[in-house]
Length: 140
Image 1 (cartoon, one colour):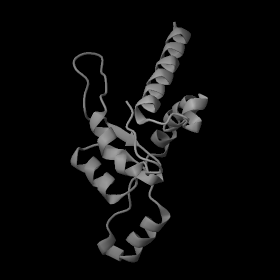
Image 2 (image 1 turned 30 degrees about the vertical axis):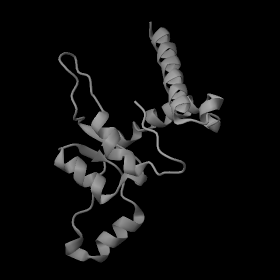
Image 3 (image 1 turned 90 degrees about the vertical axis):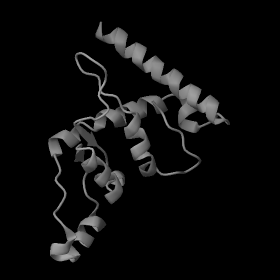
């Protein structure tokens, strides 16, 4: 599943729209729409993202930015509690980073030669299918 943004748009505003499209498969039944935890880098540590995860009772595995921690500490007791961070679970975030690197190994995606969003999205889907098929044949 991919969501395209215009130009140099940041990833963080797309956090909630992407999360709403996530489906977690279990051993039986329909996929769940609420994962147990979400791991992300410091770019996703905004109050809005954390509040959304709290409302949906999803564990946030996102480190706190230094400036956010400093502002919280500066407020003293009014600043709230420090965010919890599961370092072991955070280490698994590299799986996503490796997938992004595998997508970008295809020159058309890395260099963004495609001029229209439709053709770029088609290239992402094609490359994703190629990776999935390669991994599927490797595990059999």
